[in-house]
Image: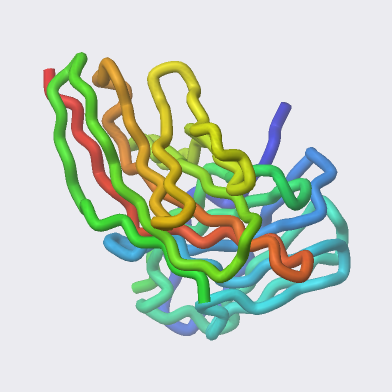
Length: 112
Length: 116
């Protein structure tokens, strides 16, 4: 019973490099989300998806892109990493209106 | 825009005592959902309790209960008989339900330390 799985769990990038974070859920959830967690700022929504093939901007979308080609996967891309993107990234999914969000284990990303 | 405020960055409580974590929110919606999540040092986000705004009865889950005051837009979490394993960051979250866009808005968190 995997739930929400994020890959990788840790990563160090150099400024200007690119990378993709993968989120996979096996609960057939329609809604998926990417958040970043920074000290003193809680979790802030980067992008989200309301179904396969859809994406939408959240609170802090600049510098990130996303894709949801398959219902179970939600990818977060950093085209040119910056030190300000050093953070812990969480993927989450939910079924619908009256349900909670289920979270992955998080990815700690450091940009040097 | 909806906002969630947790005004206590850090709190501590003695083992076996009771502690209350505060959360207020701002919204123009009438029907919505509220959650408390726990984040232990493992970093995993764990659901503690949920409350549906149209239900007047406060939610309870074992040692965890909420005091939901809809008019005051307040949603506090009470932990009874605190245990060392309750040491964690606690996040209050509001779920937007407008126009089928189900987004979760989080507060900045309260770091709780349970003292032996």
